[in-house]
Length: 324
Image (tube, rainbow, N blue to C red; front, side):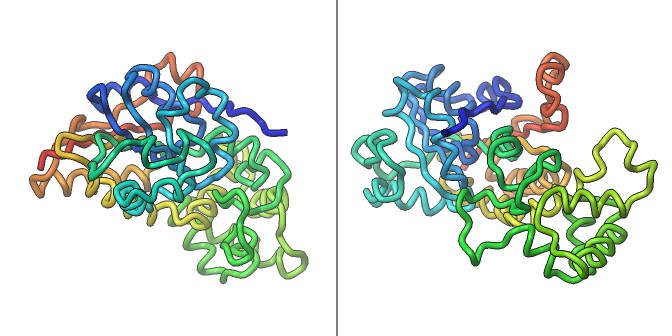
């Protein structure tokens, strides 16, 4: 039985207001997740259309009940947002039907009724959805006993990289480098050493196997800190498995290329590595004279939102407008 989406979208109103959408907008929701941004746009703009992208094929099944009566204006594509350029080509080659899933919006180019378009806006919400944390069964959360996969793909192929592959096969130096580089974990070397020592005896296969290794590798005081001691290591492995930073760099550039003049990109990031990439990309486009920053400093959640959704505390929203 499918589990309905329970994801709570961060900075929802700020993101949509910042996009400054015309009524007949065509918007790419490049990280569909629980569908919060898409649903709000379709309800607020009766003539808008959404092309929703998510690497997790199950995302639409979990969220589609929210879109009753709106189905003909949303088109779900199972892809990584680094493939925005390919989505654009499919739409304009009248081959969109083969690229979409099921009967969403009839899944046809004629239903989309577009030709030689550039998109009005693109949304990147880089946070891991509550559904992936709580319902995926793929090991994103250190609070649940699950297979240590950490891939965004619903049904990974044997050749797809997983966290099990990384912790059981990568060298101690490589492990330390990614845990420090992607997780900014100061005890990365100790954790990497703990992984190597553990896997000599038994394969590390589940989330709790890894949590136990981390727990035995870090100081007692660290385990009593505000942030759970496994948070940064899990973040690092997830980023490595899904090449999240590489995908972001590619996705931002491809997204900018298919954005119309006056169109906007909004990005919500949740850790400093992502925000650094976004900030650098936006400033480069501004320096090249191709875009302007809508907000010089990132927009953050208000106290009321943080109270209702603690995960919003780390969200940072940046918006860029293409001017040529």
